[in-house]
Length: 363
Image (cartoon, rainbow, N blue to C red; front, side):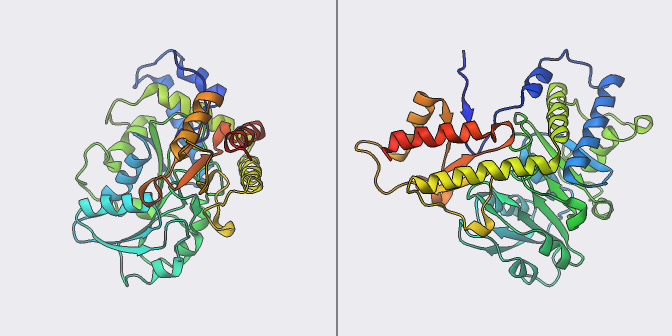
């Protein structure tokens, strides 16, 4: 029997109650007309959340990393130049995926915890095929600017990771001029992990490879399955229950309203960050590029006698039922990552965490 937790780490957020109910609905066949209608409505809801009119907008089977790979494998051929912004773990992962595709990867770096310079990305190469950037870097809590990149990218395709930003802070695919964006369900959408929403602009769709190296992630083939009912072609068995869950989660988000969701995340993030500073803790990301939905804080130099940083996280989990995340990569053991995402972004959760952390740290 699993106990209930308040999930406030960088990973899954607590699902909305409506999502939990959707997961136990009777399972339809993946070609059942009723399910296909729900799939179409889910894609429509994704367009509303991405703020796009892109016909090719769909949930891919797999988590956000599947969306990352699909976004690159469908447009990158060996020898293509891919400029990647790297200021955290997921920028590094973009480089890894692009390099496996045989791309010439041009890294544009900033220290972990600091934002990328858009002009450095735009001037890194005279004629890249792709410019790729993480909008909300999950490993550091930093927001990178996207609109400036879109305005100056020229003929390059702009690929944007919105895994931790979609639903929590403004993401405007059409308004900013993003060519391809991928996200995940488990962050601000308040749905368990398992799907990666992806959207592709008409211009980018014209530049999709005819035969990418991945069959399963071939967007040209998958789009025939999620297209108009009369022209559907079977591609793979859709994860029925996860589509139910995403449909429900998007419904909750759209009923609340995007602007209201952004404001709720902003309010909870500010409450958390102010509270951490009142406890004498130091935040990692600069205020100008700090994410409200994912806060990184330096582990205090002095912890109560006998406690290490992992012990503090373990006490929070076992004594208070609150999960926060550890640092990764160069920040492993040095920072805590605290999420306020989706249904978890509630004032009561923030207050419980601050009270618990203050008790453990004796502050």
